[in-house]
Image (cartoon, rainbow, N blue to C red; front, side, top):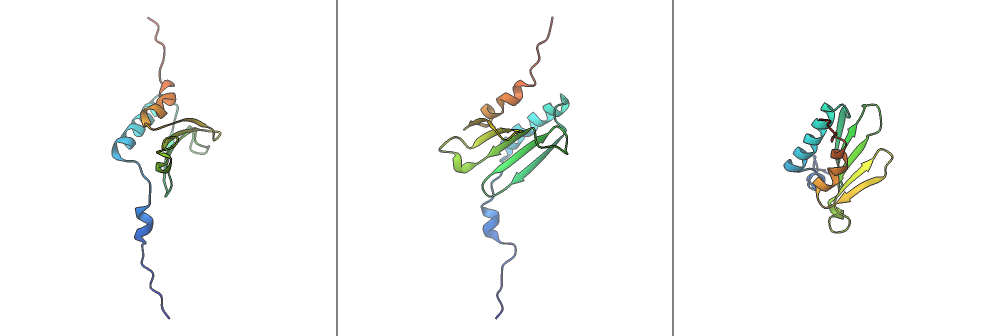
Length: 114
């Protein structure tokens, strides 16, 4: 009459999507530069079964200004990386993280007078 359920379930943990070290380093480097420029103040990381999401906030009480999503299931179709804006529109999608982050990095460029 007693059922034994294993805890924690190892099946759940094996299906989790995450960022590898180089990907997270590139994202956190961009985050640090955006913080020093005064654009962002907070971030959140959500690791799920289908996607790993990095959200960057102007203020912590708002919706994220940008979300960087990694969805390995879309690797062969549209690309597993996506840059999503504050309103939920996909701004850029691709196979390489560097290309997807390019629109955000352009915000850091400034014209310098001589």
